[in-house]
Length: 424
Image 1 (cartoon, helix red, strand yellow):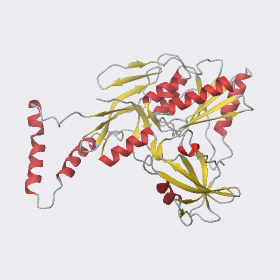
Image 2: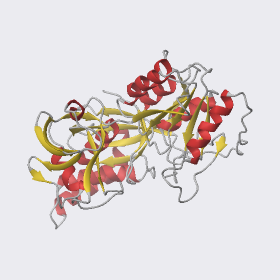
Image 3: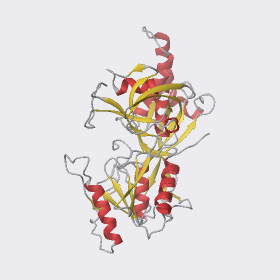
Image 4: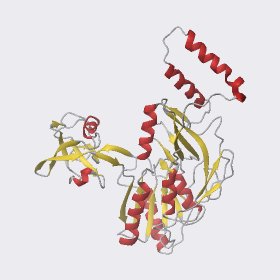
């Protein structure tokens, strides 16, 4: 059985996942054991009666799916769920961060750079980012390019949602984009490939003294991307302090969380895992982190959207004294899900483990509390970011040897059980 751990939240109000193993159930469905014959007799009686005597049309496949769904519905756990084949594939695709396309991020913008709807002469389809190491990057696309046509079909009158599917497509196929760049109009052919979503970006702040890393998800490539960008900040740019921004990060793969936390601290344990019947087991740092030297201070920015894998990293760095958390209370996702395929019937995710902070606290339904509590004011403009500004100032004060004023920890409250009313 293939196993893979993840901790994340899928958006759109659908899936909230914190730590997961990925596997495939082997062979045929096992039969009812002798010990469970009496327990399952009512189920088989009902199934047989519906199959044989129901006057309406029956789809046996839907009956089976409904029965499986009922099992998960009774758990009253929003993080355990039966998934149809389409939902199962979409969930795994969202976790991995992979799709087939060319590697362009685009937006419809007017002359002032504001969002607009239908593409026109005054509402342009503009390239806002070119994914690193993508076919689009290799073809020479630049931020600011305006896409006027796809395979000769004009984009005028269409929306972004209309155009994106025509640019995406199977790996190995070619799409030609007509772009306007300054006074030039260019036809640029691009061969589609598997694109890895970019979950990590970096920049220099405070005149190059502080390195900033934004992690928006823990996909299969995020740990390596962070390592590469962090190494550049430390070894090439020689930054004096670090900001790790995990705000609104829904999480992702557990092994990515372990690797990313290990980039900043070698303290042991990073966190703990506990099964339904076992004792908590320590999860250890991976040697070779690029920024474990505490002479380079760091802060982590968090908020209510910081969840699951991003909470594991936040807890590891806060709990081991490597970083201060700045912002507002995190989401509070302390369970780990296992994803398994049911051949011919989709699959499911099931809460199979808890994860605990370095001091073995379970934050499920409670969240992590920042050392410095600050929330952006209502209506804050994108050009202002009081949480980021506080992070910068905190690091500059620490580098200057000034005392850092932190908020007292809140009175601890018991974490909820998963049943009957889990937190959502």
